[in-house]
Image (cartoon, rainbow, N blue to C red; front, side, top):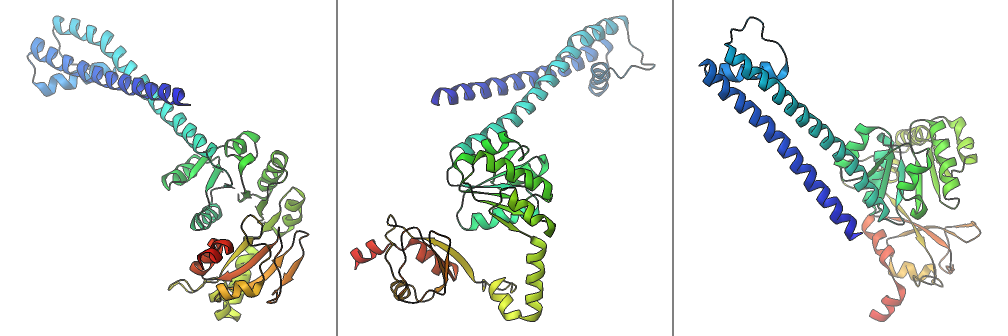
Length: 345
């Protein structure tokens, strides 16, 4: 890899120097032409510069009066100058194309360095909201979209974005699907989301996939295509608005409809395992350590839920604990290590 970086660095230096030489060549031709016509035709600098541009751009001379010596000089300028300008333009086009390819390679390289990240397919408004929420939780994200403008917008925001069709294997492989923690199919097309689910499921059968459904009739189809969960923004938004009309206080806490400060209730899914020293804990122990947290449910390895687990409920290896509270309190639970706590005590 260090050798590759050195080669890439030398390539950039060569490209930059070639572009600089091409630009200097153009400037040199303009200066030569301007001084040549000024000396031969005894014109003003501006007239000579303007006539040089006439010559290089092949616009034509119309009725311009020029001496035989000037004509010979113009012929020389046409042969040498137009070739020089053409070379410069080709270098500029090559430089721009190389920059675009290099940017894509850099994004792929960054994605290759990630693991346990989330892939978001579709960079519309929903996609950007998903990325924002994941970023707020400190989750690394790779976005995939075929729209060049949306890709640029994402990259300008510091998002690792791969330009490509998320229904194709290559785009998802470049995004690191074999190392990802989950994937969201969030385009505005249900058929495209279904194809993304099928492709992702074929490449990574155990990967959790969340899909967006514009049409509620597509929910079951997306589930059959491999989506682990299907969300309808229309239904979710409608329920939120209805709740804000009927139960504004509840909506303020659950949906965050109040815009002054963070009064929204946030949720977390806490993994229970022997590795994180949480297996064997009781709810009463957690309550004593984190009294401001609401303990919503516990899910065991069979997928069975215990709603509002009692204080004597024991958490087992492989369980997940669903909790709710303010962000700072939830973060404290996520960092909590009973072994270190006891040691510190």
